[in-house]
Amino acid sequence: MSIVYFTNMRVTPEINLLKKLEILLEKVKLGAMIEKNEFVAIKLHFGEFGNMAYIRPNYVRVVVDYVKRFGGKPFVTDANTLYRGKRSNAVDHLQNAYLNGFTPEVVGAPIVIADGLRGNDEIEVEIDGDLVKRAKISSAIALSDVLVFLTHFKGHEQTGFGGTLKNVGMGCASRAGKLEQHSDSKPYVDIDKCIACGVCAKYCPTGAIEVEEHAMIDYDRCIGCGQCIIMCDHGSMKPRWDSSSEMLCMKIAEYSKAVLKGKKAIFVSFMMDISPDCDCWNMNNPPIAPDIGIAVSDDPVALDQACVDLIIEEVGYDPFKKVHPDVDWEVQLIHAEKIGLGSREYELVKVACI
Image 1 (tube, one colour):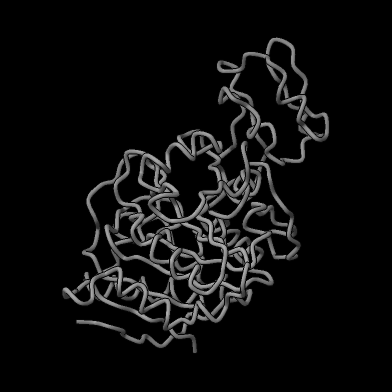
Image 2 (cartoon, rainbow, N blue to C red; image 1 turned 135 degrees about the vertical axis):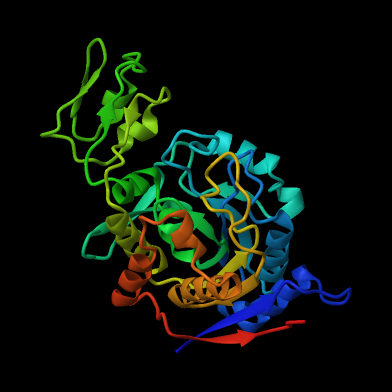
């Protein structure tokens, strides 16, 4: 049975929330995982500008300083988004991170966009899953020695809740990897936005695109890699958002398995500002549950299950089902457990609870 360490929101002048996070890192033995000069990726979601529910940079600084204490080389990271927002390329993504307070001066470490300038710096990891055979993982994640995941636990419109597995599987995928998870079909051309620049055709690996008055895709040759979406600066190459919620949840689990393959990792979930939807929105609606606390584990499945249980226990009902009634969040955890990512059975150990 996996162990999940938990601390509540109550504090004293001697033990504030930052100190509580440090205590949790000691409990999960993060320091013992780190060897001198190892690259330690601290993966989180910087939050779309305008959204105010993301994890505060102060918590990140605690983790960075803790990693440095044991001789690791920490960097703070996230990967580019598939949708066109403030985080779909490294330049905009970094500016967005800085606006939300994630600067090297504040967090104490470099900010690295894990899949590069346009989201196509990736390394394929073979897992031979039920749905995913070779996952496309952001290179900075794949090349790291130790992974620390800081997750804002919240609702999510496509997966019911957005927890650790979402941060790992979707969050660490390159843009092409995100496309693979979100869609079972191939991109299409929005001809109203296409300016016939030819960039998509230039970077298509199979020569499936021709450009005349606008780009045209030969679907017999298209392999659905998503490079055209990545390279288009005008939003004319678009994914088809037609993958079912169940398929998406299962792919996230399989991508998580690829990310964690051969890695040393710990997982931290912040059950605060539990918004109904993803932090990818440029706004956030009021919380669907009160602030609960912080939980840590070396088992991502147990951690997600424990967070759901703690929130339901506090509220008295399932708030994720209430706001997203057509989504079965349990699918993700069932499949993750099935493929050996962790256990839904856990022991909750309360630490520094006041």
